[in-house]
Length: 399
Ligand code: SF4
Ligand code: SF4
Image 1: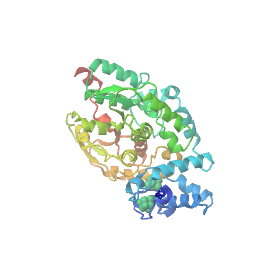
Image 2: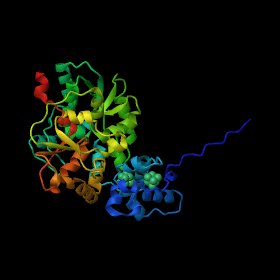
Image 3: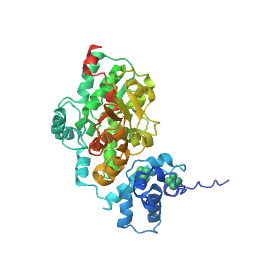
């Protein structure tokens, strides 16, 4: 009998061909010019360690800890190196062996997101403060969230009032998004219903697991299992997410059953109703979250959706570059995150428009952009793109 030769096993760590295409897109290489602080350098360190040619030591730990996790290197890489997967595994190993220590506040938050009801309750004072116009921290952007009504209750109320009969989707409400920034979830519900979409919100859904993936802490599998169960059996076309990072994490979890779509991409495919033209000189600068373009590999936010906002808009300079938030990076490595943001936000000093609006589609990026207020010389607003499409509650009730 003819023997077939076994195929050589794909070794992700050895897939790098050292071309260096990833260097210019890497924010930590751009900051430092240090090869070890680049994707190629980190891969080399991990490969040498795995082969036993390099001892684990503080220097190698440092270079791993410096990575923002933006995944821009994956998009740039012609050899298909699965950098994100390798990094996630390495970070988890480093946490397990004490080589990387997430800050205490991140550990507490990672534990708390496993209990959504408790997490929501604990952040009630923050919602109340925001709804009164007080912002307890530079990362907390302005907004008027409902303090008590949940997005699920809100969606049920508006579904009963408007009775849309179009495509049926499930909405991922998220943990931090629901607990702190639920006005964005409410706007998402309104925009979907306004566009005749039926919205289902599975009550037992939980955190997408992105927080655990970023911190390297245990518990991600339990969160994934919970969401596989929560999103099963709802007879929906897809799950939509209004947070690029959460959508990316949930898509890995559900693996197409059902598919996960970014809500703006989904609306772009529907033929979204345009908002009236906005009068005056307002100008929107659109920034693209890393986990949308480098994680989900989307081209960006559909032009039809951005046109439908009614605003004059343009892409922010270097829109596909990282803003420094990196999920947890602006808390774990605030100095680096701020330097990355300072470079990226410098254009706002001289940006045309009144008001100037920075719009993106991930609440963690919005937090990071909000903290640029102390870096930028002129005032600017931070919004989620879905908020620019929002007809508002009154208009929705009266239409
Ligand atoms: S994930 Fe981002 S910060 Fe990390 S190596 Fe890749 S490009 Fe650099
Ligand atoms: S782009 Fe890919 S193959 Fe080229 S150096 Fe970077 S990781 Fe290696």
